[in-house]
Image (cartoon, rainbow over all chains, first blue to last red; front, side):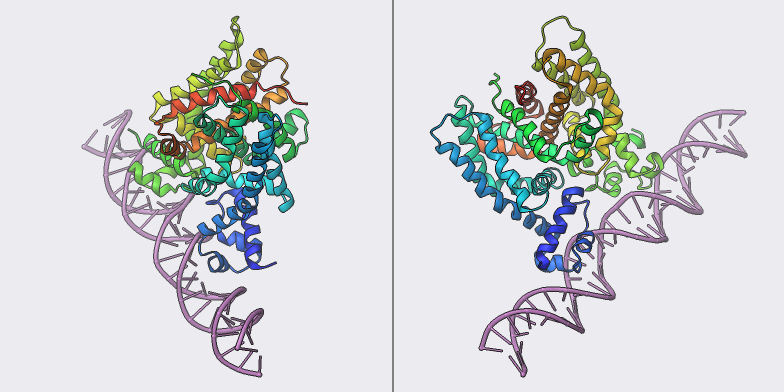
Length: 208
Length: 208
DNA sequence: TGTCATTTTAAACGGGTGTTTGATATTTGA
DNA sequence: TCAAATATCAAACACCCGTTTAAAATGACA
């Protein structure tokens, strides 16, 4: 495995767990078993490393997500909101085949992009806005025409909040679920529980 | 204003904006206009300062939330899920009267507790679990008896995710909403948009 | 007014941070 | 094969971190 990949893999592990500001380059290069200076040599800076890490997932996710949503848009069959969200689920779960814990790692990284440092959220949205948000808006509009695109925008972000937050705290929640309800759960289980929730949320009646 | 309060106010501002690990004691004491050593003198450590900051809100919020939920439990009138969530909204919005931007600050701090450092989420839940979660579960159970307490537990956490993440990114989102839809919004507007969403989410049909 | 506890202060402590340097290996292509 | 480009390395850079110290200032109370 080449140095760049070793760094990205170690960074993903640590960033997802401890956040961007909470993880040092020395921890990363130590786990990656490469020299400290390699990060700046290959990526330029810590900030660029973070972007490269997100890009590695987004390059995989965005096209399959766009395709999945377009299939709904072009389909002649009757579709409902759960179908629209299931269009999200398969591309997201396929990140698990790409890399171990790919799905939850990506969503946790996305969560840190929201809260860790100002600007990453904006960067994420602006570099992926047209592909994903427009298609999502169109797909929701198809199955729920009364909803304005403005309202869809908000409900999409509520939905992202739900997914991202849940994944960021999956470990703690699975632990609590096990202690209080005697359940053993994995990421796929949690996602299956989220779908009815967010589908109902996006499909909520329009308030005045 | 005494030193402790000056520190707490400055810490709240910075922690909410930049997270716990992203904010240094030197920034805090500089903005609070107190000596650097005052934090360790009055609070013991940075970690204890964070707990004191959360406690300042929770001492205010928990009793009024419990009371608000108990009113629904004891009410003989017919209640629906939107009523249950409105029970959350008033106590949350009243934090705005306690302190400027109190509501969004608290929710952002809560968000950082989840993602910033391992352990704070657990601390928050265990110190507030009986009061809030049990009452919420009972209130939801009253208006939606078919839902198991296990399912309610999950849907409550999805709801917290929605609220916490929306507030964590309110600034960016309000900005985008203004650019793309020509809207001017404040926190109360956003919360009003969230309620139908989360009420519908929690009230979603039970999946098999 | 003088004593004693409380609070504030400047300075230093030991250690960790991201980044840069210049020398040394390693790989590449003519 | 041998020079040129690429990659790795240990060491140092300048700076920021949370915490501690011991002296100075302030407060309360007899």
